[in-house]
Amino acid sequence: MAEGASVPAGGMPAQLLERLAAREAQRKAAEHMSRRERRTVGEGLGGTGVDIQLPPLRLEPLNDDEAPVFTSPLHNTPSFFLEHMARAKALLLGRINRFCEACSTAEDSPSPSERTKTLDDLLSQIEELQRWFSESSPHLKPFHVEQARLDVEEIKARFHEVRETVLPKKKFKFGNKTTTDATKPKHSPQQAVSPLKAPVAGVVAVAPSKFTFSNLVDRDDLRLPAPGDPADALRDQSICLSDLTRCVVHVESISGNLMMNRLTGCTVYTRQPVASSVLLRNCTDCRFVLACRQLRIHQTRDTRLDIFVPSAPIIEDSCRLTVGPYTSCPSTREVFGEAENHWNHVQDFSCPTLVAENATKSPNWSLLPESDWLRDNQ
Image 1 (cartoon, rainbow, N blue to C red):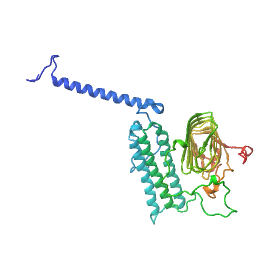
Image 2 (cartoon, rainbow, N blue to C red; image 1 turned 135 degrees about the vertical axis):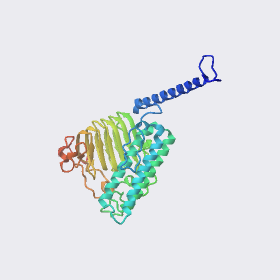
Image 3 (tube, one colour; image 1 turned 45 degrees about the vertical axis):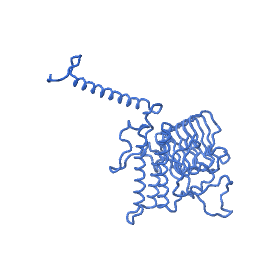
Image 4 (cartoon, rainbow, N blue to C red; image 1 turned 180 degrees about the horizontal axis):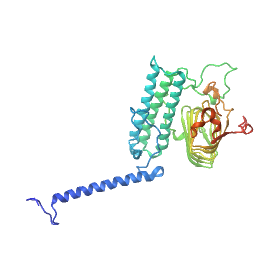
């Protein structure tokens, strides 16, 4: 023992006791962190603690120059949410701005069809971020929800601005041109829709509570917009339907986009078109009567689809779907122009060898007999 070292009554030097106490503190801190990580994984979506795991975000880097949104899957929690939202925002704005720059160059500028495809891809990525935000928001603090809402609004406003620049005659603009009485669509005053402007500063990135139905059973009176709201209240808005059982929903005016998740035994009617996309996830034994620009279906089974869609519907990890045309939806020409209905061009991404010309050979979907098609008076 060094000369002068103090020895407490227990017979151990004070410095050694200090080192042991420091090690014990480190051990307890590590044990506490381990418990937190186990609780994070164990609670999942059904947990109520601060460190619950949020839904996954499918937004991956496309090259080495793009940083991933998540540094670790364990960090997909409310406490890291704004950090991840900021990275996702930077990722998407970077892609949008690079696309705009590519379109402004004289050489190797994308063709009109390539521009349309890239815009559709970017829109899908924005809607994936919006879905993540919508499903995560119940676990977030109000301040975080508001900040993230502004972030996604900024992304969507920039997207609309670039879309106006690279496709000045975009075919999916709401029609507002002057028509004669003979050719003017017959709509009641309540069905009139204002033209879409760019940039759209007021686009709501996550469905507000007034445009959301969730955790309901045996309801047949669900309607949007709600009684008393303006006829165009849904324009540019996101609608979210989740965790519904044996419910009937009517969407009665033109809306921005529609997301549906975990619906069982439900019927959903869009009496007017969805101007952008419809996303279905985890739905069972349902019927959907839909008019939309794009339709994507994931992990859905035993479901009937009556649809008007100008692009090929996409299904993945789904089975026992039956598909028929929806021909009686008003305003499709106003919203989609002269686009044809590609209701029977379903692409099954679970069977990559059966896309395109072999699409109808997929075992996961089938055409409804013509005798069962939706009639105008139904």
